[in-house]
Structure formats: C-alpha cells, structure tokens
Length: 313
Image (cartoon, rainbow, N blue to C red):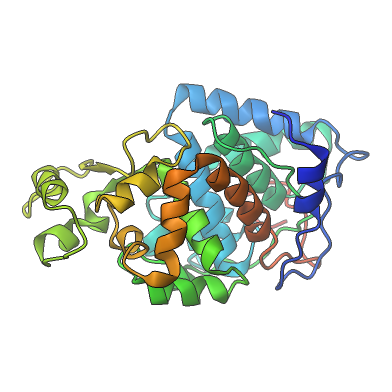
C-alpha cells in the first residue's frame, strides 16, 4: 500500500516521551533491506493458514509494549529460575509466537545478528493491520531486545474490567494520551474474547450502559455454568476486517468488554468514539499515528539483538 510523502513525514516527526533511543524508518536499508519483505511473507502465509493470527499478533505487540516498552520481553520463555511475561495471567491466551520466531529465523539466515525481535514484532503488527484492510504506516526501527521478563509485571496491563479513569491513567504512564487510548482500543476490531473476560459483567451486574438484547445474547453464549472453554464472542461483527465497526457497536451499547463500553460513558472519551464511528478514514489516520507512538514506548539502546526470540543470547 502507498502512503503520501507528506503523511510519512508527519509520522516520522512524531516525538514520544519515555524513548531513549532514536529510531528510523530506514534503519535496515543498508544492513538488511529484505527484512520487511521476509516478515510480510511469513505473516501473510501464517494468516492464510490460521485466520486468528492477525488479531493475535496485534495483541502481542500491545502486551509487549505495555510492560517494559517495545523490547520483545513478552517473547522470552520462562526458565526454572524465572517466570516470564508470557506466563503471566493476562498473557496465557496470547498465541502465535511461532510466527515471529519463524520470521526471525528466516531473517537470521539472510542477515545474521542484525534485526531485533522487537522490530520484527513491530513490523508484523503493522502488516497484520494492513493485510486486514486497515491502514499502513512506515514502522520506525532500531529497537533492541530486552533481557528481563517477569510474569508478575503483567498486572500492569489494562484490564477488560477497567473504567475510563483507570485506562486513562494507565496509558498516561506510557506517554499516551486520551486520544491514543480510544484509538488503540480500536485494535479490538480484530479478534475474539473468551467468556472469562466479560461474563461477570453480564451475569453479576446491572450495567446500565449495555444494550439489553446484546446482554441476553452474551448470557446465552456464556451461561453461568459454562463448560465450553472455547465459548466467547467476537469483539465486533466484522472480526477479520480492520474497520470502525468496533466504535459503531460501542455507540449502540454493544461493547463486549466493560472497558470498551466505558469509553462511551465518560465525557473525556465519548466524543472521540463518536468521531471514529462516523469517520473510518479519520480512525485509520489516528490509528497509524498512535501505533507509531506506542512503538516508541520504552525503547532501549543498551539491549541486544537476540538470535532466537524466546531466549536471551
């Protein structure tokens, strides 16, 4: 997909707090010019084989950047001495790590010890959005991989039960503002949630913000004595297409997560939800810009280039 030089220029000018290293869209042009194509082909092939891959990769990127910054710490396996992020409760359902590992293996053959796992994940996250009919943006590169990954730190991930104030504070700690919060929540346009992330909301509370017919439908899919571990609900009605349907559903009281619907019950976020529900192109522009900002969170320059994404060198 093409992007205008002016738009790319604006993105590249994005200045983000909490980033210690300078990133560049052209970081690998001399040292590994084929890197992005290798990643794209790997992600595309995996997505054809398993349509759940795009949503999983996008979620993986969010969950990685929100803990220690975008340093691929989520990709590290646990060891006998350390329980890693991927085994923290919110990340048990994060899947498709093999896609990033496969892309990294191919890149190591083409350009050994050059491209970080953190950059592979950032590029893959962009690619899954674009191949799902969403926006494309130039990914800034030059991240290093972290050496620390702790499961207990995943408690800092935003919860599907959070209210707007908690979400705003969580994003602010990472240099992301209210508009970034609403925009990046739109990543839920891809994906599916198991009952455990929302069933309490429809069974145990009389949430005035939820559409009653929609709540009844969720109760049927997730009964109190639910024994189907695969039961759940898609987060919007076009779950394999990146679009603004997520916001349209929220305006109708059909947000699956309490945290999604909370965005429409708070004056600080409601108008942004409305604007994205009405204007998909606006949402796409803002999503691309917010993904560049998210990709700059906590970038480190004293890390390493892992040879294998699941273990430190």
